[in-house]
Figure 1 (cartoon, helix red, strand yellow):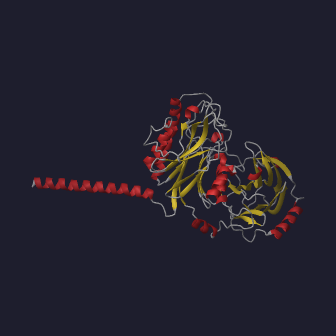
Figure 2 (spheres, rainbow, N blue to C red):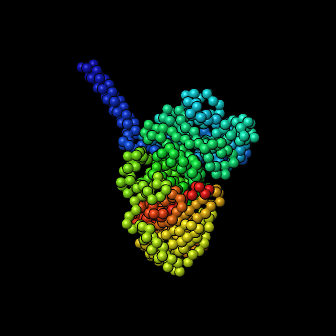
Figure 3 (cartoon, one colour):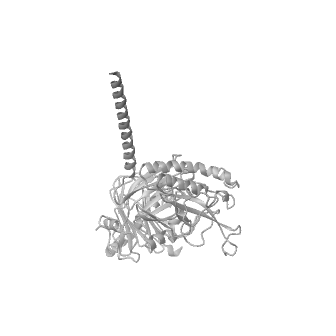
Length: 531
């Protein structure tokens, strides 16, 4: 009897153990499957805003071993974020510019941090599986292994070196190029793309590539992606030409962006770029609030997932499921309040949204101009510096009204109504000219901005908070079709315009019913041909 009970007990224990194992195996498989589930026509993207560990003395030369020690500390954080993103089902993750090696180097002192990056179109290489194929590739090897282990596409930024011969007329005197370089690994760890930054921002350690890189890479979940870096976003090459010539609908964007309000905070312009071109943008910024560096996001033409924090000292992982933008998806957008192509402007492939009956046709606009002319006496013109440019302003007075202000050949128009009483001072500003500080490029801008105080001299200052709820229609007779709609609300939050688009030669943006105070509403035009 004892033997029978013992046998029964052992048999039941074995059954229970096997059942328990099966349960945990089922639970594990369910969790893995759950992490990989995403809706058809969508993909899960991740970006990481990284607070990088910086060299304490970037102007002092160190050796390769010491340089690797610092970079490995940053890579350890990267691996944690790759694993965390993959657990949430992410199929691609983007890391910021300068996140691994840092910044403020000289040409000589950055050299120990540089890696050799072969051209993926000429050499098929998996650094994780073939670590000894090239020397000075320890960072690439670690990135490759992260992608391979987590089965995820990985985008990172590194410093790269490339030897050149003295017969090359632009070969630097030390016999090598040094490039600010983005690299992409597929889910098998293979290096599939390399982009060398074109528009350097006071980066004396790096060279501009001899020719512009137009870089694409293919994915099984969202088709082709384009890629460019930080300051590139303000120029035609390569950002705009890549989108126009290759019909790119998804962009990865590593950046180390220093925020400048009221028109060029990171999240503000990243969303404007995605909206203007009807694309998805995966933007990863570096996180150093003491330097004004924060602001990352995953942007679609209709929705944004952002992070901006000037107080926290920690990095931030953003994961979101977003739609793949295809011709069919664009048709859906066009039939649902966003993107109706305009045939009235020469560049009709730039985004244009539905305009309601309140937006003026040309005759109505001329009448509007006459009304604005009459209001000039009540709205004195004044001048102020904003974004290092000399703007012409008129104050926004009272609870409602119509205003006009002009500079050179650009006239800006505003129809506004405040839905709450507020003593905050706002101004309508215009700039039409060559921007020459921290870069040279031509800007046409119409801007409704909250001023920093109660005097006209504070208009154009950096402001982050506001309480006034303002319904508005803002427009201008722009000479360029490349216009980026900026809509920044209190607390560095974003909103979308109700309507955008061309009517005759005027481009308009309108917004009604905001639930948050308005900081900036602007149409930021880039006239690339006049750079």
